[in-house]
Length: 275
Ligand code: ACO
Image (cartoon, rainbow, N blue to C red; front, side, top):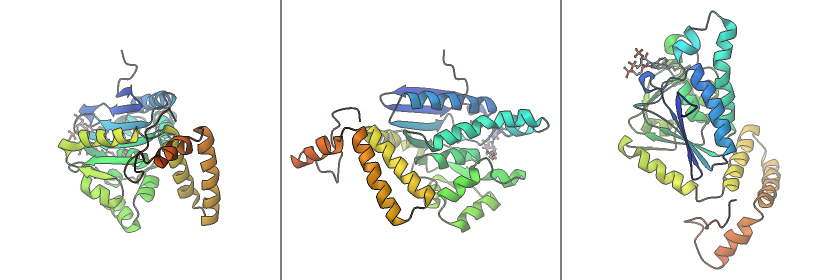
């Protein structure tokens, strides 16, 4: 029997899929669900998969934090309140620096904390029909717990970020792409197949190289590095990557190109070992 009650965790062939599984509550994230996510992310990280997909059961991705179980029920007992939401901070921080490529597959309703989850993932493939919103202001608070951070860091436009924060207007999956929340939007009927195709492409690439792509991007983004520092940092990371992969990019990737076995502009070299 699974040790998880509120999520489904599947790990197979370099891919982990975690499904938020409270469809009767639109996958709202309760304290128990958050606690399970802490355990699940540790389990997936230890499995050293290349890609982790996050998605939801039924017609919701994540309907946000569980407004009753996380907030309303515990507010009058501050210690219980903090205990209930603390695991959410833990697993979301882990998600932000997760070693595998993280893919949000947004199949439906996506509100508040659900948008935060998407905002912390590397890639988001979303249903055109999905409905998104920063609904916090509708019940009297601002997007907290890291959600405003994801607004600022996903939406390039301040005018749009503040508009959706202040109005709580909803938008759909197509608009989510334009607003910076999603990588691609496809009709719901094609969401699984389209995501599977992207994930299949990712797992053909090296685990370490994808990890280093993420690390380099994150550092340069977060530290707002000047160009000369970025150049120095990137060359140092290239040597790190080369050491960790036993120079596989030269010995296999470019060796294979030298033999004209593939066109790097259009496809990846065939991995000969787990790098
Ligand atoms: N917390 C707790 N329960 C929730 C949540 C939530 N975030 N979202 C949905 N539910 C519950 C509903 O209360 C309802 O429970 P019930 O069957 O006991 O009455 C059940 O899930 C089904 O939801 P309905 O409202 O009946 O579904 P409907 O399709 O009509 O509406 C919608 C879906 C629009 C998502 C609506 O449920 C809703 O507005 N949910 C709240 C969304 C939200 O604002 N989330 C908080 C974001 S802010 C944050 O995360 C901090």
